[in-house]
Image (tube, rainbow, N blue to C red; front, side):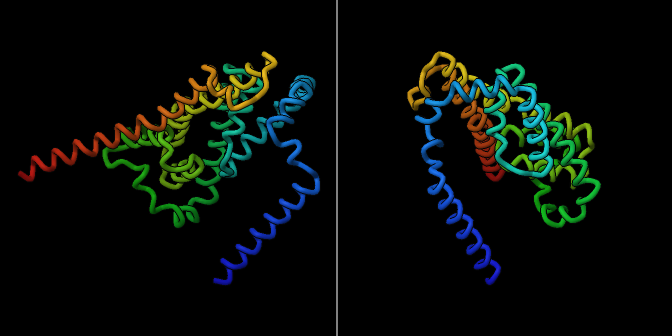
Length: 244
């Protein structure tokens, strides 16, 4: 009970500190669409002048975040599309995520396997398939497609459950391709919108270069869940027939 109260107090303190800094530094005048529209030329100019340094920091940051199981790298996918375009952006995102996942997988397997097995071992039914490693590999790919569990947790589970290295690499590579493409395309769509000297507004969501990848993202989430729901209904019907 005391630990929960202490955590709550720390959270409140940090929230108040952030709010005070936000107000004192007038950050609200910068972190909005109007300010972004006003300064976007300066932002793009700075990016072009320091593209090499930015790329190095981007790659290292992405790999470290994935290796350390820090969630929220979607913003990096959007930035890749915005800065590098669809082809280089997708290549960078997939490469950085894959390298970070390999580092994470290796560290967990070598240093933290026993500790994390106690913490997450009860989730093995989400990954392992009783029909063998081939079925487990397909399961891993499916879990990348469907956001049932966070990617960082899936990396840990693969390491503590003894998934072979190359199966982990292959399934991770295949599994992250669809969402990586979609997020990069969204970031690229924003960049193309800005190149036409149009302001960033909610109305831009009506443009095909933005709503098409968003629809694709929605389908990636909905279709597998619909398939799983249909399979459950078919199994239930088959069970009913057997019982009769």
